[in-house]
Length: 172
Image (cartoon, rainbow, N blue to C red; front, side):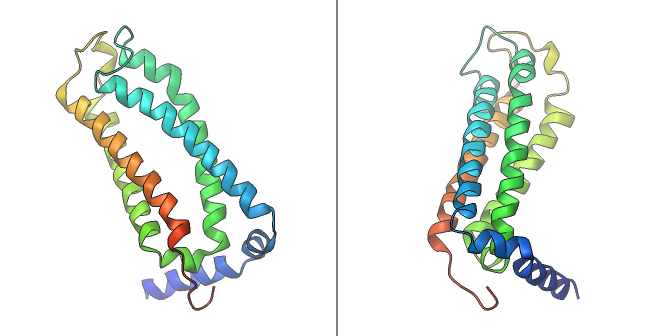
């Protein structure tokens, strides 16, 4: 039942006017993909700065709270743009992407990154305003930064491999 619903949704997305417009236009898909890559670059670059601070490897003269406060608004804007453009790219070939191992791995890794962030926000980092400057960061926070960095590197690698491993499937 659930699988039929998912298949119906993928078929509906794949056959939508928006999907046809994106996939059949010679310029739209490359423009969306370019914006997606630029957004990911800004997202990852800004998030990496925060993660490096969490790990005690950068900006030791500033508190993690101040680094996060200064950088994360840009990170969230870039993430939103990447999410929108990534969704548009997915819609253009929903069935094909849903059968791609690297796409599925990327989605699983995104879930893991979200869980890591939630654990940090709710448990590990709830008192980060008190951590101060220098290397006085709890080990759990350092690990959260390392895990975040490794997850996002893996997500980006999977994302790059998606385009090189797409194979046409029935209905696409």
